[in-house]
Length: 147
Image (tube, rainbow, N blue to C red; front, side):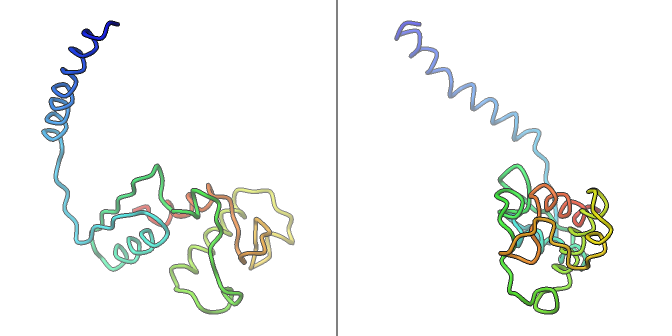
């Protein structure tokens, strides 16, 4: 392609983009909610779930491909204190932890002894009392947020 051809085609590109933008705006629709949460990390998911359980209509957005933040995208275990199994967390976080352990009990071949362990740590990590695969954390969050 010669330089003049490139320049003439490049000058048409903004018109193409503008017409696509106009079409997208024409097909956009409005949504209404009591609460809009920007960001679907762990905190955003917790806020959305708490608000929905309180009877609010919630819209949660997330700029990446999936929810859960570092827990689901970077395999970073939860940052917790050593007594997390007995006190110091919300009921909702306790439900998440129980659901994650139950996910492993339902979907993974575990020994009878491991399956019976109330404080199952599937990743056997030492940085947290509960380490898990990112995809498991994502599945648990999706299940908790499902209508």
